[in-house]
Figure 1 (cartoon, one colour):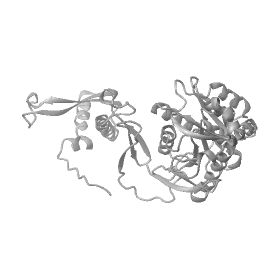
Figure 2 (cartoon, one colour; figure 1 turned 135 degrees about the vertical axis):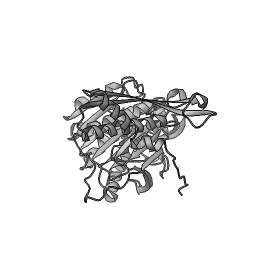
Figure 3 (tube, helix red, strand yellow; figure 1 turned 45 degrees about the horizontal axis):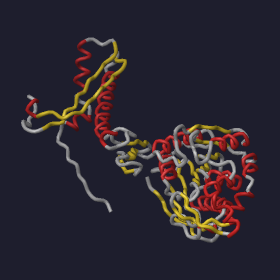
Figure 4 (cartoon, one colour; figure 1 turned 90 degrees about the vertical axis):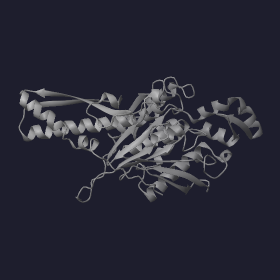
Length: 407
């Protein structure tokens, strides 16, 4: 899937680096994502959720706040209010170049910022918070031992997640003054709260306060066993799945209708690394999106079928479809076909009918179960038809694969 990178002008006049994760086709909707405190737009959770939502047709804009990632400016000069203003500017920019976001998503302090900004983005119809504090001042707990010095000296360098950041008195005062509960009670948009009960950074009591303060429609989903930053790929992908399913009740996530009926061309299969794990791949076939991976024993995370699984699936599907077409054309009482396949390596010398006599050979075992009130002759004919499916013929004929590098 394409990622469009650009800059826009933030509240402080600095150029902020942004990334717009796009579906392969026309987006069904646009979303704006606010990352966690001191994180960046390319934080694992932000990127994984954005990519996953793009596979479902939702384009997602994420950006680096002032002084973070590739954005200009000094982080020390930013405040919670300036972050909120930058979110509104990001929505304005998206409105100018594409379409205003109808979905707003915020992670951790970004969730609080999204709640604060939502009222200033009229096109937004749905809001999602992930591990968000009910009070922005909650973030000061990350450096509470420095608060007295910050107030006394005006600015102190603190270590957050192993990195140094300069925190100023203005930031501390700003988060203390912001009344987020007023923003939540006056939200007037659908709200989804995602929170882990074992989050030791932002406790689940924060989610309870947000939920109680918000008006309906509102929903709460527990991210069982997830950590605060959703570092496990499965947790981020689950969050994306939940968001996509939930938001479909409030915004139209169906792909835009085609404006004209053109002849359908052969569809290309595009396979691209997601970088979520060592072997994780995104497979795109027209409007369809699949995930490929390797089993844990092979060094993968088993997030999807492996390459040979897809090969067997293609043969099995083609076999069943071909038998169904024949049965329907001949009016045979075929109820259901089940094809079970297995791939293995065998010694060539053990295959009497094979031309190759030395080394190892690939072997595919295909077991076909035919349900229905068919006689012996009809079953025999269906089994013969199974070998005539196009994929079977391709696999058993000479294949030419043309590979070329694309600049």
